[in-house]
Image (cartoon, rainbow, N blue to C red):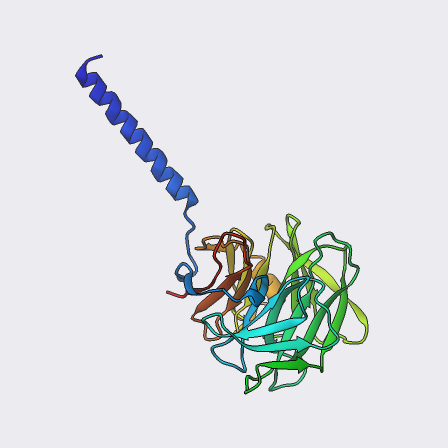
Amino acid sequence: MTLKHSLLLMNRLYIFLLAGLLLSCKKSKKIDHAGGFEIGRPLAEIEDKRLEELSGISESIQNPGYLWVENDGGNDAKIFLINKKANIKLTCILKGIKNRDWEDIAVGPGPEEGKTYIYIAEIGDNNAVYPLKYIYRFEEPVLGAEKKIEITHIDTITFKLSDSQKDTETLLLDPLTKDLYLLSKREEPVHLYQLKYPYSTTDTITAESVLTLPLTQLTGGDISSDGKEIAIKNYDDIFYYKREEGKDLIEALKQKPIVLPYEPEPQGEALAWARDGSGFYTASEAVTGETSFLLFYKRK
């Protein structure tokens, strides 16, 4: 083979490899068509051992600049108010309640106008064995001098799914209607279940299956405080939906979602919108050998 032929083959090989690399990058890149969110920026490393199994997060209304978080099953029936350095500022103990498998948390309107409420979702069921699920609702506490308080006035919303027993890890509270929604986790497609407001706190009610979404392994989500944006996540992606004026949540979720920029966390299950619309937060359970952070995805 002549030198000329050798150089020609090398040039063709270089072009082939370069084209393959560019194609690979193009396929793996997640495009943000949602008006712009930056990739998650670490606000703080989650170092407190009491926050090792975070499964839900929601920004406080009564305590601006703070976040409510919870741990999943097997932990104490407690929620924590943290700052954006992931330091615990208040511990709330739910009297008479057990944490079977808490999987999400929401903060928003409730039965009394002018007050805000915390909703804790006792909805996990890895082996699909529990006939009933629960949502615990109580008035949102305000941070004061005490570092630990006991919550005694708790409403329990007891319900079953309309079709079958299954694992669910995502709770959505619609701030416009007060309706509650759950998303199943392990199916493909997943089911969206609705509890229309007002919901009984004395009888067992049924969460009706109202929609399927072509997703799977969903672990958390949130609706923005103005009700116009929905974000839900699994371990690999964050899916964004825009809700048009006058549309209900079900109609909004019928759209094809936009995949936002996301670098998977060690075991990322929690997501919450910022109250001021500036972006959203995520947090992960601790995984041995890996570092977990409180992350913020800023709107561009």
